[in-house]
Amino acid sequence: MSYPTTYDISDTDVDAEDSDIYSVASLPPFSPPPSVSASSHTSYDVSMRSGSPTPSVWSMTSSIRAHAFKQEYGRGINNYSEVYKLAADDDEVDRLGLSEVDDINLGLEHFYGDFNVVHAQLIASGIKDYFNLVEQISHVLRPGGLIILAEWDFACYDLNRQRVRVGTHELKAPWWSRWLAFAEIAIRNSGGSADAATHIRSWVTEHPAFEDPVYEEHWLPTSAWPRDPFWKRIGAIMVDDISEFMKSGRPMLLGSGVPEAVVNELEHNARLEIKHAWYPQYILLKRIYARKKHPQ
Image (cartoon, rainbow, N blue to C red; front, side, top):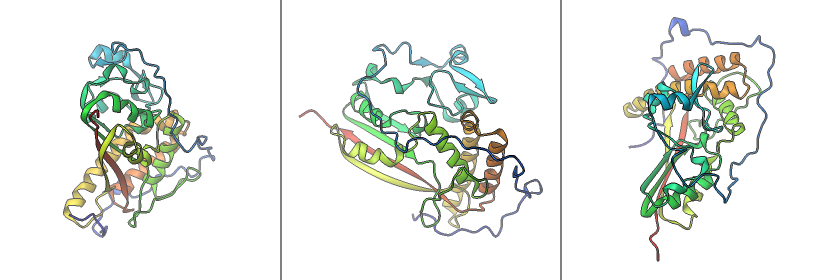
């Protein structure tokens, strides 16, 4: 099956309440969050974690959840990691099926040699040092075990699969791409690995503990613009997923200093944009898997 290459917005109906793009153009100019270094590759050799898993790995009960999360900007945020800033409340637990809390930024020594499979998907925003995470995974896997990583780069791509480059210095379409530009800065400012998707292929392929790597790229439409029925359905699913992701990311943007009026404008207009497929775009999911070598 081929990836979508054409789109059709001729049958798009705009609801009456959606007819006007939300704007706060009359607001005073704002200063975007400060920029940070372009790379998250800051590996370290010594873990800060205790050898016992007791303080850091919890089964999720209502009483523990009450201590583990705090309320910020109307959503529940984790209370144990300064890096992960997406919502982690009951709504997110139900959506993602979360069942344990463990700050893997502190190391995974207490799991060394315990797993046959480690699957880490879309966690880069909460990881300080993704390169070190790959190193930790090489230890928690048993020989012959499987590592599977999947990440995206918090960006959109046009129909030619070229990155849509927008900044935070102005507020205008394309809105979903611009929301992501603010999100990427917020992730970097909180210490997350916003560029992990760019490096996971080399980090696994060149790691001496792994063999037989397989790398894949998946181009996903951000709305229901493709003509092909299959990809149109995928695009429709992505509309719902992106909408929920923006809700989850709202505390992260507000916490990074973006004014609430700007967050409201970005989110409102991005929802309209993807709902009505005004800008046919992709996101790029990068995936790699490999086996841990057996001892010689």
